[in-house]
Amino acid sequence: MKIGFKDKDGGFYQVEIDRAEDIPQWAADMTQLTEEQRQAEISEPSEPPIPKSVTMRQARLALLAAGKLEAVNAAIRSVGGAAQVEWEYATEVRRDWPLVAEIGAGLEMTDADLDQLFVVAAAL
Image (cartoon, rainbow, N blue to C red):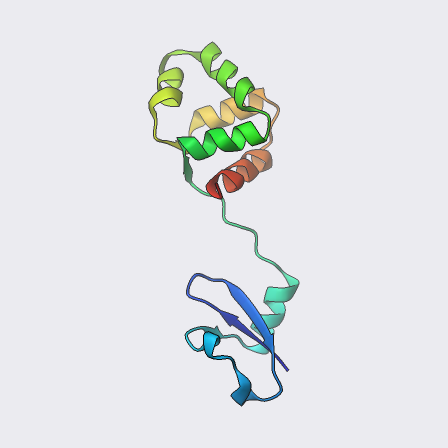
């Protein structure tokens, strides 16, 4: 029989055992899922949440990896003023920052593209 578990951080684990007494010791502190919950976990992997913000370091590394850092820097320079100060001195980039949407649109990035960029950045 297969049994599913979730750890305190939401990580999903699945083991195959012959008897209920055979549950591994490493799963002792985890929440055991019902069969319905286990099936839902394996059939519908959850999407990572869209971060509300990332550090400026994460943002720049994600943009560099996507080949968009130079274009973003150029766009920020062309806007100038407060946008340039924010880009140079802010410690984080917020997903709801109007400049993110403005620059993204200028680079022909969809909301989904921007969301994915934030997900990637958060993992760095």
